[in-house]
Every structure is written in structure tokens, then in C-alpha cells.
Image 1 (cartoon, one colour):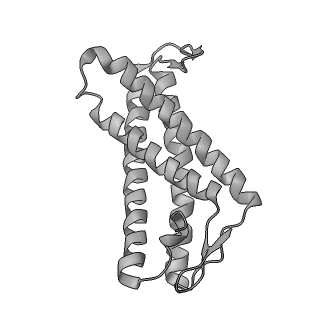
Image 2 (cartoon, one colour):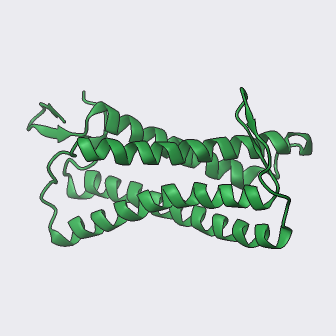
Length: 181
């Protein structure tokens, strides 16, 4: 936890927490974008785009776990006084965000497994773990898609809330996650 001095001191998140936050946000946007746009790419690119989507999903899952481990030993800065309702909404939304950052990639991996797909990590590959079961894969794929929309929707609300704090409430909620100036 670091304090920056401006007109008034602001307790900000440490560099690692901020790095996890912004890297996760970028990867979620990238994975969601690739998932939405896979059909826009030339058909010859499909395997590569799908594999990149899976690799990014694995990265999101790893980052979510690392974030949770980091958080156990590194407490966030003290909460700003926003009132019990906003604090409760923030707390619940963070739990849901973490849950979705773990669930969406796991559901995606289940989809890949039931689709008979492996993952190519470049230096090594994991072969398909089972033969394709199209009926099960289709159902899991729909759950993965809905969960991904829920994650992106909740993350978007999270961003809007941060901007609302910054521009409407004029408090330091957003600045706590930005690099110090």
C-alpha cells in the first residue's frame, strides 16, 4: 500500500495489485473480443484464433488465482467512506467478478474438452482429453457464452461505477487503482 500526496493523501493499491487488475481487464477484453469475432477472421485462421482465446482464458484463470493468493497476504488500502450500501454493492460485485473470472475459463476448458479440443501452448500442447460429444459441448458452450457476457457486463458496470465515483462523487476510488503521479 502506497500513499501519494496531492491536495490530500490518497491510499492506493500496491503495484502488484494494480498490475493484476489492469492486466486482467485487458485479457478479459481480448478474450471476449476474440470469442465474438472468431467468425470475422479468415477460416484458415480459426484454429489459431480459438487457441489464442483458450490461452488468454487460461491466463485469466491463472491471474485470478494469483490475485486471490496475493490478496490474502496484502490487504487493500482502507475503504473510502462511501456509505454502507455502496460498500456492500462493491463487496458483492467484487466477489461476483472474482467468481466469474474463475468460472468462465473453467467452463471454457470444459467446453474445449467436450468438443474434443486440445490446447497448444507453443512449447508443448495438451492433446484432446476425450472424444467430442457435440450435444454436451453445445450446452456447455451456451453456459460459457452466457457467463462471459455476465463477466463483461459486470466488469463494465465496475468501470462505470469507478467513473461515476471520479466524475460525479469526485472521490478517490478510481485514483486508488491508477499509477501514482
